[in-house]
Image (tube, rainbow over all chains, first blue to last red; front, side, top):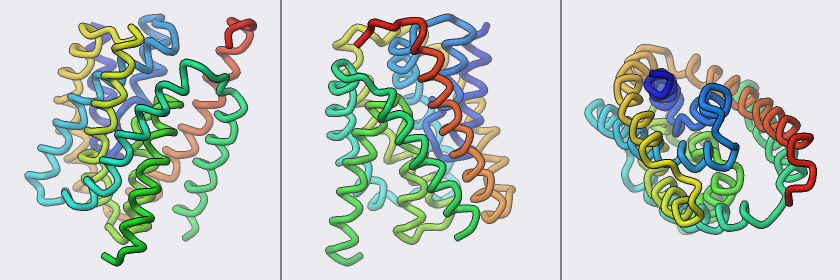
Length: 114
Length: 131
């Protein structure tokens, strides 16, 4: 039941923002099902596969999906993700995480005040 | 699309993949701003981001499965339940003005940044000796 609630929340987030939904799913999995962080992240990736696929269908029906651009950023990203997940097993990420959080904040500020 | 735009998109895509694998974020929070910068509208960028996410998460999930971190049954339940949420989210996004959607997205970025910091701070004292 908890998993269904997590899925629902992740789905709304995903389609509303064009993101995978891991933003909602990972903390909820950690808090509600007590999965360890790495397992929660990995499991959320599996769920996102289904979520994003459903999102593509929902938006494609509305004519909003640009396949060319998706391939242009999505395919190199797949290669990058393989490197990133391998790297995650080996290195400590806390300093990197703060840097990444800073980057996201910067992008957010730019979107608010273009 | 010029050759330099294509090169930029490919480089940003690769960087997004590395970051998404590293931090366990789907990549969408970076795809959307990248696609906006490449000239797409907010709704179009979000929809296209969802398609771009697919190869990334497939690769990431496959890799995590090899490390034994992926709980398949849990992922299936969460994923299938999310399909209902997706339709709700898409309806809300389509109904909202794109300007509002962009501002909401900016707020989301702040929330994700805060959450990443929270996860890091929280994980630290618990596993002081983990690599």
